[in-house]
Image 1 (cartoon, rainbow, N blue to C red):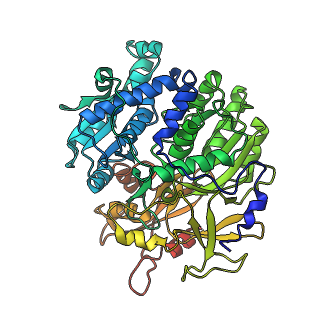
Image 2: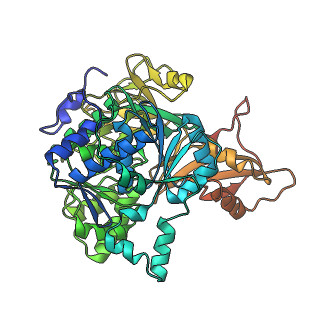
Image 3: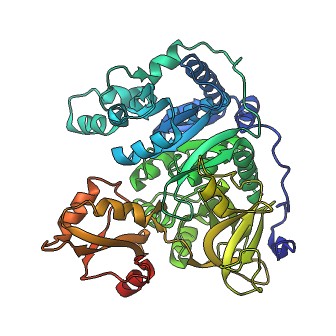
Length: 556
């Protein structure tokens, strides 16, 4: 099955069976965009515009500043930032030095950040001001902390308005700024004093570019190692998948977080690859998006299903025209027909579903950008990508066509392993370059794939991965909780919602609302249970392992 590539017949005209694999590092894409489109707006951040020429200068200055701060090839540099121009500059500056960017969610709790920082051992961290104090207080290997002021990237009039003694200004200042701990450097000062010097040694195409944390096919967070070749290949695969994309003529909306593999590839690397304007939004807010539409109407809108639902409703209510949005690619959770109908009737463009995982940079499969797309299917493999449907117990054996099995993927975007975790790497990477996805899929005679189950018990909520064991470990620390199982249940709003089934400790009385509040103090909001149910006991296997699938089934 793997060698047949039966899906090629479904490729639209202009989509190649294979890409020319990159022979230059990812930074070459930025250099090319700067050379070809110097005067084009590269970034729009709440109205503040940065051209590609300006972006190239800022990256060169930032690379020099980081080099002078001691960053060398192979060093890990933690990026703990929301979507903002400084995030884009820092990402490419780190890569330009041959160093490794490590993306982190700035809304992580101290415990979550501490685990990841300790795991990769970065000595330099570039943080949003609101996170800098948390990082400074952690016992990690970070020696140089660089604080980023988000308001420095705003248009001059908006920066001036923030100084007004008015409630809205005070609220926005509180949302965007935070205290800078003693000893921390300031990003803006570093760049203002750094020379425009592009003489630092650059990376090679096989060098590691990014560590992206994921639970993989289990619940233990681990750093997926992605090279320049992996990321550049996936950017090129994404570019050719949409044959109507115009070099130097598109506007991508970055409402997906850049610290997430999906947002990073489509909203940062692919967009830069074609010299697109990237409209950066620090968070998803329908009104904020629609305000941006007036400045730079979108042509390409990557997102997750709830975004399309909320944005379509808001656009209709406000009478905002979204007909420039020719392409929209949805991922991270199933795409409902109702969402597709609402979006396409509003925009006149296509909304199609794709599939990927952090370990594959992340996109491997997508519906064709054509009337041949199939709602309910994740689509067909990307160029230069192969798939197999393997026996779940013996991945060396293929299942008959039309029978469910584990989805295996091979291609230039597949990672090289987990950071310092050889056993976990060996468990998912198979001979021949195949990766086990942990998802159960069916492939039809035309090559289209449909996910029918999940071998792993990861929960997908709002486009983010939640690993039950991580939430359970936190909840078990509650004094009234004797045991707990965490599962995902279907949700029209977020795809799945996190639900905890709690067995009270001996003699204890559990208040579900109190357990939820306790969890929210220790976990990111999307990880905290939306519901807490009580039980006298939990189903277990013969060796005592909690059977989460049975727990989930009992709640449906």
